[in-house]
Amino acid sequence: MFCPQCKQTLRVVEEEAFRALLCETCGGVFYPEGEFRKHLELVKTRPQEQVPLNELIGRKALSPLIAGTLPMPCPACETPMKPFNYGYDSNVMLGKCPKCGGLWVEEGQIDQVVRYIKGHPVLDRLADGLMDEQREKQAFERTVERVSPKRSFLAIPLFTFVPVSDADELQVRPVMTWGLVTLNVLLFLFARRYFLDMAMVPSEILRGERLHTLVTSQFAHVGLWHLLGNMLFLHAFGTRVEDRIGRWRFLGTYLMLGVVAGLAHVFVGAHPDEPCLGASGAIGGIMGAYLLLFPTSSVRVVLLYTTVPIPAIIYLGAWFVMQTLIPFTSNVAVAAHIGGFLAGMVAGVVMRYLGVGEPARARPEGGAD
Image 1 (cartoon, rainbow, N blue to C red):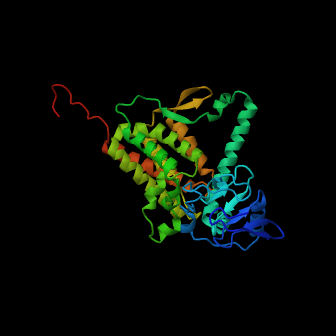
Image 2 (image 1 turned 30 degrees about the horizontal axis):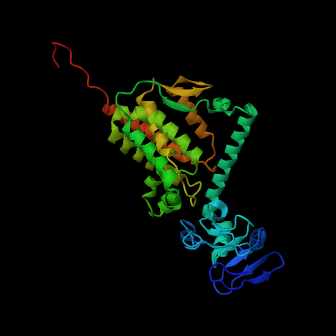
Image 3 (image 1 turned 120 degrees about the vertical axis):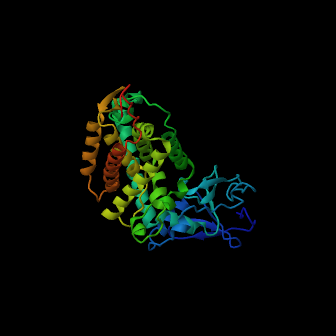
């Protein structure tokens, strides 16, 4: 067999656990189907490596040959190999033969794959959160299947009590709320590789480092369900608050409450070295402001196959009580939720005292001031 890059004869390498073919000129290695996995099982037993974060974030090892500028024939059957992203999200691009299943690994890529497998303590904690989310999703899908194997839409009642809107009509279009929702979605779709840089780490904030992450962390989310839940709550409560206090005042209030919520999480100190992501602290603040600005209003929530209004004081009171029942040591930033909500209530009191957004009282006709 010959190297697909430099056309030199490949040397057979036979170890106790796997078999491969090595090009001694360019350092590339060809693994027959199944052999690469055996090699990885062997190297997993090596001592844990500490990989710098900057080597893992945004990593891309893409050969111009594998990228397609020059098709690479499989050394075993000469079928053109295709790019293969190991693990689907490692950004370590290998060459895979669609016919015989062999893998071509260029020099240095095996070390990158090993680093991807062994990971980094910070990224591993985030990955654990993603795995928890995936397990919840799978549990949800199993529940859907139990409801009806053929008609999964019958599981809509599982979304019961999710808020969808304020029950009252709006006077103006909530452009800023829609803009925040759109921005969060776009960042989730196209900028997730930067989320670790945007995340807030409490110990760094206490040292006065990366203070901007108190704001940037509000626009990054761990997963789809995290994003979807936050955006539903933001739309349900943000539209009415924006309608009351105005677009730019709403944006400033939203960001300020998010910062206060982040500081609450920092000073509780439950997870000092773990990244914190999400808009839930800022949204909790908007919910607290909503409660004080509209204490007699109702919120439309999903109930079975329709929506029904529930008094805001009952819905938000129940939400707040539920937050207090979650331990601070959990993976949820409970302190940010509670701190943001209480800060929002204070903001609501101040805005009511100042009459922010309230129509001016009409003077009595024909009377003195």
